[in-house]
Image (cartoon, rainbow over all chains, first blue to last red; front, side):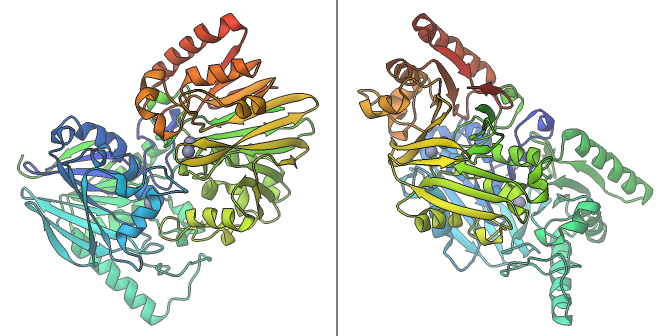
Length: 306
Length: 280
Ligand SMILES: [Zn+2]
Ligand SMILES: [Zn+2]
Ligand SMILES: [Zn+2]
């Protein structure tokens, strides 16, 4: 399979010279099995360009089909959907998967698409769309690919995904806080500290074990590393991790490669270079058996049988 | 009035080297008044960068105040609000003026943006600053930081938006973004709203060839903007709200065309570019 990054940024798109190399678009990753349709993870602004490139293929003739896995519906993970060109072409088929929540998934997306926020209602899209609600932990099939999900520690809850196909596996773990300091979920957490009752500790430990199990022996682990350790200290309740957290999970799960992902909006390319260099050294010093990259727009990673 | 452009793009932010010169952030413009007051127009992603710059001022200490004029609530005009640091500092004061039948309706639309399904902020009530929302009716005039503002509702595809005529000491700046005219051209009421402005900032989302197939989307071509500016006897026209697919080179070519059309009539073209300033 081929993994290609179309948007690597967290929170909000950041155009400008300081982000030219890593890119300013929000989260979107394309997983392309050797044969079969694309599986897209998240629909941040990066999906706009992906959609345009897909229109050069079968989608341009209204004969394409794609699956979109949504980690969660925060704006930086869904903003690009109304700008995904294949949706506007009759004959295409787009299947959208996301976590089951109180409001029906289709209603959530309809709200995003409709007045007073957006001029084109979802019902006006010409492609056929299907909405699939997932329960965390469930496993399902998309073409030849097997997809598994796990719960993450993020406000309003997010899902991690593992995709296995062509004898390889990629795990997408965004957005999540580490599993040590706070439990994030349906309640709004105002404060950076939380009393960790035994029940909360147990829930966090179970969530962490679920993530390690999901990432077990993965060829590539894509991980939310929005924060530096200093930034995390101030904002642990925002629901994002440090590179240190990604490396810890990678070690335990024995993954082969880690991609730093979901870069902070104001992080310049030069700062991202420094962070990567710093953690490459950490990996070398620890004799870790995996390699580390920092995701940038246009990065392609081939995995498994090619 | 000193105008500064923080976001000049339409519909969705467009990052990438090919938009470095004009900028890829969505709509946000600031006005510094003669007495140093701050008026912000629209809250696209450019607002985050304006907010970061304000952290070097009294806004960092919770002693800042500003008026915000909102043309309409499409995402590209409100996305920056949750990323505007001064609203998270206790003591700062904001008055937002925007479209809506009542203050409550407008506030609930802005609340919807912060819906926990979409935003970790979950509600506007998590702002620490004082944030007052005021609905404006078409034709109403009000004072914003000492500027006299008159709002006019115009068509924007199936939606409506406000344009703002802003006056200070006999100088006039008009902000008219996301404007859709009928094929017959700008109506007389629009021309009256822009009349004799020193500077008219006008939607120029499309080239005429794209407008031909997209009129229902409710944006202007640069030709329509020039037609309006000439009819209203405007001195300078600012091009704005460029389509997200246009590269810097595309916009350069649009500006060349605009000047070909405008210069013979004595109309000056000022292309909006992120970071540029303009004194009215
Ligand atoms: Zn995110
Ligand atoms: Zn707009
Ligand atoms: Zn609009």
